[in-house]
Image 1: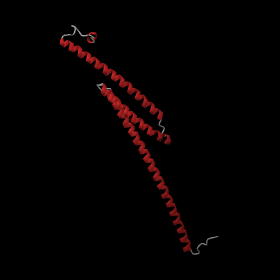
Image 2: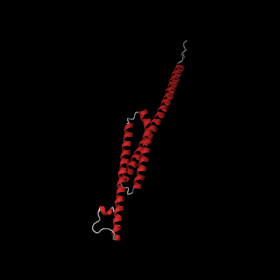
Image 3: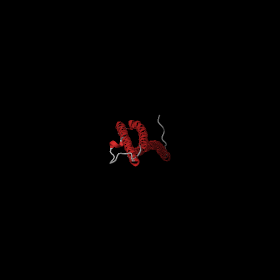
Image 4: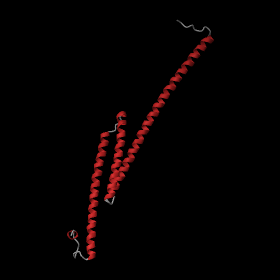
Length: 175
């Protein structure tokens, strides 16, 4: 069935203009729909990247905190202070491992190129180094405390006059 076309020039012109108006409306609606979808996708991507950036900043802050605590442990003067700093470092490392665990699903889905195993290994190596450093520091502080106690005892003996005459030696200090 054939649609009859208008016979007058004015009617034909009106038909063409109305078809063009309909075409512009359909193209406009399609454009708005695609722009809305694109804006939503861009917003979602921006939020994901912002979240990833915030996570990276958290990891950097934790790393700096761990570094500062590790440096502080070498300046601690007592065994108790070394143990407290060591405990804080281990807590920060556990928190850092939690951030790395949070990164793992994002890495698997987005293929960021982050080697999760390397992060876990470096965290474990650092944990081992911190444990060794804390043990060495505690041993050194305990030995220093033992030497100080021996010196105090020898000085006390000299003050009371009960120490042997002459220069104190390790043998006389241990008696």
